[in-house]
Structures are given as structure tokens and as C-alpha cells.
Image (cartoon, rainbow, N blue to C red; front, side, top):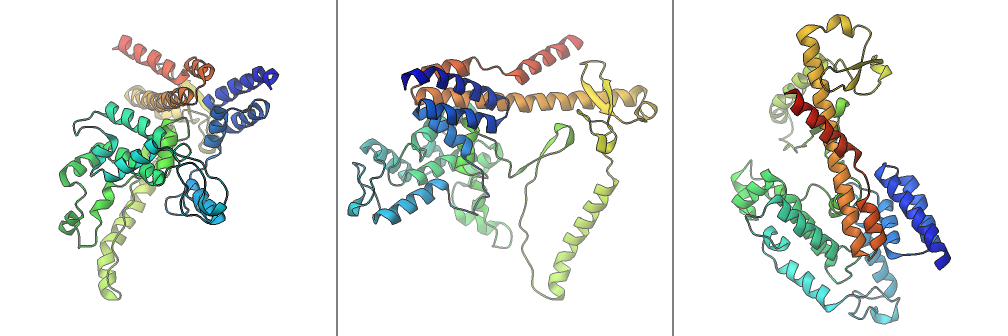
Length: 375
């Protein structure tokens, strides 16, 4: 097995580069090859992370919960003992320590989100991130098999999701978890408390921090890298008959006006990449930052002088927004891998991740310097 270690390390290096290049399938192939050549816990963890697929909230139970439920059914026991053996003579389960049991108990006894994360009410965004990273690794169901660890992990994710959102944190600080506040809003049916629940699953949130993908259930990306968040609202249904129709009239009018507005909105006259379907095939470059963009045949006739300057400013704004988005993803991915490496005791992997480049971040720095020189 030792003779295969060098080849396994080479496969891991290729896999890390594939992850950085957003090629998960290639990364998975090399990680599986490395695991066959020289099995290690950290490679197995990376494979499991890549194999995880996001699912709609409420559609299916969490994979960890399904695993525990199936195991309990097969073993005929409701909970494993502290030494890792299932009751009733079934299959042995993964063990847990007394410290893990005590940690789960502490989270269950917490009265608010701040206490769950172990931070003060004046904690900064960086304080929240540090607290979440530490607790998420400690309570992740793949590492902590104590009874109630999955619920504690979800509570930690919910606490961070609420407190990291400035608007939700403001409302939470004002109203807390008092569900009686709901009676003061709407028609008595509005669930005001739901504003303090996480918009993404705990696993999605964990993957965001530790090298996985990014949640996309509430994010829609439009052309030219402009990102908008679509917050859906539930409307109360009225009575049947004429009364219901009268109540729905304002909504129908709003939908009609919105549809007409969409029909009158013209698509942007450029794209940051070739788009033959809309005629954006002619390459141009902005004057200030030399950003490449693509336009139609008639662009030069329609846009001159100040109108051309306005278009090129929008092009450069979109380009910078795209760089910032990719830069944030690169940093989060690298930071997540750096946190994983020492946790699994792999020094070599830690140094390799440290040397990983962040091309979008480098281009963003160069672009911002060019802007400073221009102004």
C-alpha cells in the first residue's frame, strides 16, 4: 500500500485543481482512484461531499436521518450505547463520547440563537462565521453520532442563517422567538415566526463554508451576471364565489400590469460572452478597462457619444460584479478546504490548498487598481 501513496497524492492534487476549475465529475474520478490506491479519511470525506446532491426543503428527509432510521430498524434498537454497540444484538453503530453527548445537551438547553452559537448580541459578521465553522464541524452528523446531534446541527445552521442576515437579525433582536407577535400582523394567519427559520438546509449551508456548492433555490442569475433574489410570498385564499373573486381582483390586476411591463422591457444591447441567439456576435472592447463584450450588427449605428459611454459603463459594472461573485466563491471554497485539511490530520493537503490560485480575485484586484488610476 505504501508504494501507492505517491500516486494517490498525485490524484488528490489533480482532483483539487478540478474542484477549483468547477469540474466536479473529474474531481470525483480522481478522488475515487486515490481512495482505491491509498484509502484515507479525508479523501473519503471529499468524495462524500462531492456526492451530496441538494434537494428541495421538505420533499425528502435528510440523508443522515434516513441512514439512522434504517439502521435502527435493522438493529431493533432506538439508540446506540455510548460504547458504540446497538441494543438487541443488531449491527454495531458508530460510537460517540461523553463530551459529544454533553455538547448536544448544551445546544438543546440554549434559549436563543446567540446562545447556540456562543456569541454576544453585539457579535460581528466575522465572529458569527468563526463560531459557525467551529460548531458545524463539531456537530456534523458524519462526525458526531451522539443522540440528538442532527437536531443540534440543524439548530446551529438555523441560528447562523438568521443572525447572518442583517434584516432578519434586526427583527429577531426586536421580537425574539415570541410567536404571539404573529397575532399583530395580517389576518391572524400569518406565521411571523417563520422569518426566523433558515432559508436553506443545514447541509447546503455547511457545504457553502466547507468546499461544496452554493444553494440555488432562492437565487436566479440573469444575463450579464446580474443576480436577483426572488422572495416568494404566500397569499391567503378568500371565500368562494363572488367574494373570492373580488378579493382576487387586485392580484389579477397586479399580475396583468407586471406582465405588460415585462413585455415592454427590452433586453440589454450587449453580452459579456457571444450570444448568437440574440445577435450578440460582434466583439468590442471598452475604453477604460478594456473589457470584452459582444453586440449586434446595428450597435454602432444606434449607440454613439454619451449613449455609448453609458453602455460601456454598464458593461464594466457587470464585469466587476461577475468578478466579485467568482472571487467570493473562490475564497469560500479555499477557506473550506483549509478548514477540512487539519481536521482530518492531512498536512500535505493543507499546503496544497494554500498554494491554490484565485484567478478571479487577482483579476479583480488588477481591475480596481486600473479604476483608481483612471479616477
